[in-house]
Every structure is written in structure tokens, then in C-alpha cells.
Image (cartoon, rainbow, N blue to C red; front, side, top):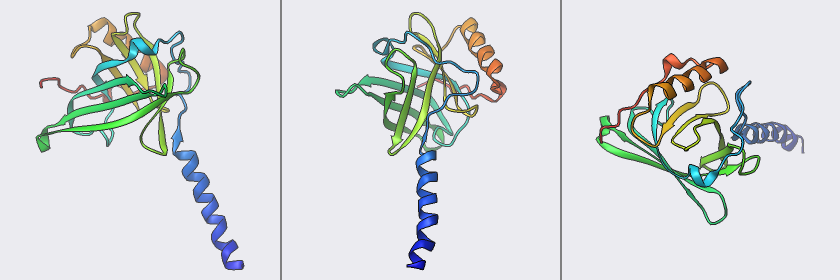
Length: 179
């Protein structure tokens, strides 16, 4: 019995740690998700204009995200990019769910259940052509566009907003869209 108790405490602690860390759906301090969000207008293809480097997208260009509605009301997410070093396309399929109702641009996304991450839409233009999206901390940020480019005034607006929140925007990667 003592051996069981000896093993049970670390196992419970590990389970708690994994549960807590498997669902990081917060929002960076000072950031606000968009209100009056219209999910149906957000669906479709987006080009990734800029991002921070992280392991799941490292070395990818021609990166896109495609969003479509699942029958259960969640959103299907298909991220795609071209890995030049391997001369091949990479694709990840996931699911996003609203955290505060469909009129708030705050979702959680998973590509490896039960692990979820934050997807916070911080800014979007009225025509749903450009968006600024953040994760749960200052390590994750994306600028998205319906086209392969973005007007300079939108780019500067999003970079300035990100800087005010504490993002080191000079470290962003600007993927090529040539395929």
C-alpha cells in the first residue's frame, strides 16, 4: 500500500500538469478579442503574411489556413505550407471551437487532441480581408490576408498594435508566396 501511495502522488501531479498545459487557451495581457465576430465571414482561405518562428511551421513558405464549418458547429482548420528543404507540401488538419460564443473572436484549436491552443483574433477589417491573430502568449502571432500580400497601412496598423501589447515584431518571419 505504501508503494502505491508513493506512486500515486507523482502520477496525480503529472496528470494535473498535463491537463493544465494541454489546454492553453488564454490571451496575452492587455489584448482583447474582436467583438461582433461573424464566423461565416471568416471561413475560407487565408494567406499567412507573417508569423513568429515555431517548430510546427519552421521552414515553411506558401503557408495558408483554410477554415470551414463542421456539422457540429466547430470549425475545420487545414493549415498548409511548402517545405523547400524537403521539396514537399506539409498539411495539418485540426478543429477550432469558440470559447465565449460565436460573436467573440476567441477560440481554441487542436491539431493533436487532447492538446488545445489559443486562437485569439485581435483585429479584423470590416470586409474580413485582413486579420491579426494571437496565441495565449507573446510567442505566437500571425498576420493573415485573403490575398498573398497586404497593404502597407494594414501591415503597419497590425505591427503597431502588436508592439503595444509587447510583441517583438522585428522577429517575425514573412513567408514567401510563390507557388
